[in-house]
Image (cartoon, rainbow, N blue to C red; front, side, top):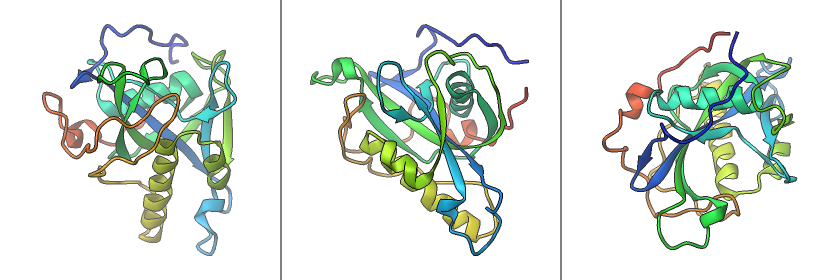
Length: 221
C-alpha cells in the first residue's frame, strides 16, 4: 500500500537556470460511451482538478521534480499525493511552461521562478484517502467545464494541447497521448505563476534527456 505521507522540503529539488523544475499532469478518464466513434471526445473525457487552500480556483496536480526520480515519476507522485489517483502516464509531456511564484511575481530576477512540464495521466485507480487530502479536494469535470475553472493562461493552453493531441490520437486508433515539446511557451499571467522567458525550446542541460525519463509507467498500489 502506498504511503499516506507526502514529501516535504526542497532538499532534493532540481533547479536549472535558477528556475525550480516542476512536474505535473492532467488526470483523465473515459465516460461509458467514450468508445462510440460518433461521439464528441470533448464530451466523453473527464479531467480531474483539485482545490487549493484558502482559494476558490481549481488547478491540476503538480509539484517539484526531485533528484531521485524521473520527471514522469515526479508527475505520478504529485498525482497521488495531491489528488489520490494513479494510472498510466503519457510517454512525453504535453509541453513546458515557465512561471513565477506568487511571492516573487513582482521580482525582476529569475529567483522564485519555475519551469513546469505537464503530462496526461489516464487514471486507473482512485483512492478514498490520500496524503494531501486535507488541503486538496478533487473534482471530475468535462473538458469544457475545466476550461472555465482554469485561472491561468498556461493551464488553459495545457488543456488545449491535451484535447488536441488526444483527439488526434483517438482518430488514429490509439488512446496514448504523445506530444512534442512546444518551441515557444504561451503568453499570459497569473497570480500563482506567470511566463518568464520568451522560449523553452532547448532540452534541459545537465539533466537526463526527456526521451529517457518520460517513458510510459504504470503505477502499482
